[in-house]
Image 1 (cartoon, rainbow, N blue to C red):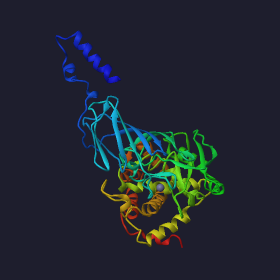
Image 2 (image 1 turned 45 degrees about the horizontal axis):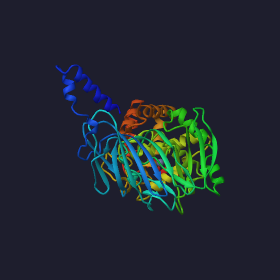
Image 3 (image 1 turned 45 degrees about the vertical axis):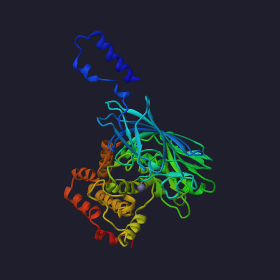
Image 4 (image 1 turned 135 degrees about the horizontal axis):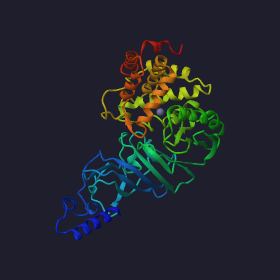
Length: 440
Ligand SMILES: [Zn+2]
C-alpha cells in the first residue's frame, strides 16, 4: 500500500513538473514492489519477524516472514522436509525454487521491509527434530526449525514471533507472541492435559506459572518452589526480560528416562524427569537472558549460553538458600574424568555442526559455571553480576561472542588473572588442577 502511494506521488510530481523531472524521479523507475525478480540464494537477509499459523491436525502451516529491505533480491530459507505450496507477497506469486532442504526466493528490491507468505505442509518427526505426534510437542533446537516452518536456522539471526495453533488434541500451550528478537529454535508448542499453577507475579509485573500433566503436581510444585524469586532476581540483577509478561515452565513428555529442559521462552519446556529439579527450572528461566535474550553468534560460543546460565541458576537459587555447587562440582568431576571432556570455547565461528561435534557435551555447562565462579572469586560476585547486566543491556536482542564478554570482564580489573582463568577453564581441554579437589 505504501509503495502504491509512493508510485502515484512520483507520477504526480512528473505531471506537475514534466519539463524538468528531478534526477531522483528519473531514477525511481517502475514500482519496485511489483517486480518479480528471479529466485536467488541469500542466507544473510535479515528476517525481522515470523507470524506462524499451524494446524496440528491437518499438518499445514502458513508463515508470514517480514524480511528487511536489501540491495539483494535473494532470500534463502531452510524448509527441512516441508512441502511448500505457495510463496507470495501482496502482489502475487514470488519466483522461488525448492532445492529440497531449502528454498530460494526472489524478493523485490528496495529499502523497505517486505512480507513474504509461504503456505506448506509438514510431517511428524520422531527424533527431536520437528513436531512430534507421539510426544505431542515440538523440538527445534539447534537447527531443526525448517521441519516446522520456513526459517533461517542461524542462531545469529533473531526475529520476533506471533503464533496461532489449531487442531490440537488437548490443551496447546504456546506463546501467542514473542516480542523480543529470538533465535529460530525458540518458538515451541506442547499439547497435553495441562493444569496451570499461577505461582506469582514479580515486581516487574511478570506472571510466572507452571503447567503440569496428571500425576505431576508434586514434582511441579517442588521444582518451582522458588521460581518467582529466581525470576525476580534475574530481572532485578541482569535487566528487564524481553520475551513478554507471562512466563513459566511447561512439563514436556520427552519419553522414558527423560531429563533436562529446553529454553523455549517465554514458556520453556522441562522434561518430566527434571520437573522436580529447581536447578533445571532456574536454568531454563535464565536462558531468557543468555542464550535467547543475548544469542550466540555461532555455536562455537555455546558457553556464552550454557556456561553463563549454569552459573546464573546457582547464583539465583543461592539467594533462596539452595546451594547447587556440590551438585555442579560432582558433575564437573564426572566430565573431567570422562571422554566427554572437551575444550569449552572454540576460536572458529560458524564452522561446526553442534550436535555432531565434541562441544555438544556437559563441558561448556560445567567448565563454564566453574569459570564464572572463579571470576566471581577474583572480581566479587556483585561486580560479575554488574558485568553480566552490562553485557546483557548492550546485547539483548542481538548475537554476541563469548570473547567479547571475556574482554568486558577483563576491563573490570585483574585483567591478567581473568585471562588466565579463561585460558585454563575455557580454552584448554584438560581440566584445571583445582577441579580434582572438587566433589571429594
Ligand atoms: Zn541450557
